[in-house]
Image (cartoon, rainbow, N blue to C red; front, side):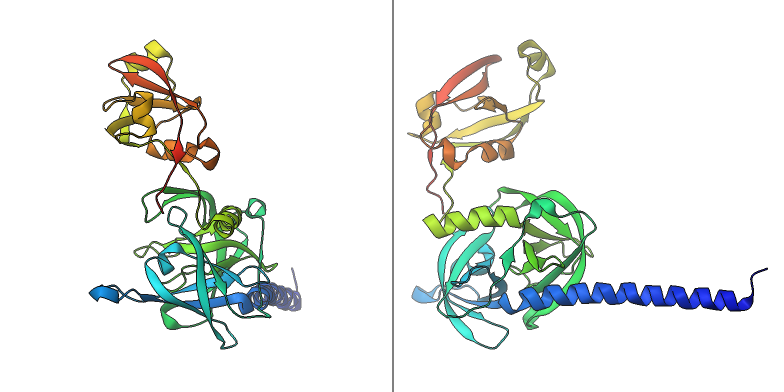
Length: 331
């Protein structure tokens, strides 16, 4: 029989252990907030009101990520707006210039006019693991510099952007986000930014999303260099369509679906290549295309002006055409 005193001692030890773990968690969150928090800004953007235009002002979050004052935020926070300003936690309000934005990844880069600005470091999103602590910092509903914490719930999610294009490599977290958190950072306990918060599911609890920092780093570098993301374009509007099994077997087609070309832009690359309405795109540059999102992923900057094979199904026969994508002019 174990003496009652031993039970009390064990209980006390367990309580001390639990308190130590809780304190360690608190200290980790505090460290991340103290490291990144000074670089998190509130973004205020005014709607264009010239010529009687309507619209509404927007408020969101951002994070300074370079010593010379470049700021990351969401495209939807600043899109179609002017008079952008950023307010720092120390109370300074600085004018911000839009450097570039990309609707397809919901990212924008601003530049502040101030000096001696705090900044946060972008981490490597490839190193994060499901279950690790994640901290969100932002300005929801006007409550400036709000901190929430949770874990990385999942990696590699896909999310539809407001432009309609599919965003890949999205981080799911249960660190609570609310309107106004958009554009703020998702942070590790080591004080590195691993994502830019972009969306939540309003009807759910604890299902929130952030754009992974490696995507952010690539997009931001291009926005700083060019003011936009360069993508290739072939001039086809289409939709996913199933491929009959008999045709798939006859031509050795592994995919069960392709892209039905519903509209061909006159004078565009697809038209010049001989693509016709009703054709089904099966592959581009030797890579199978099972839907519009697959085709979008392949229309990258390095395809601009490069002759490429496009495999199609036309009236039950497989054909290969040569197509040279051009640079997309869509903002």
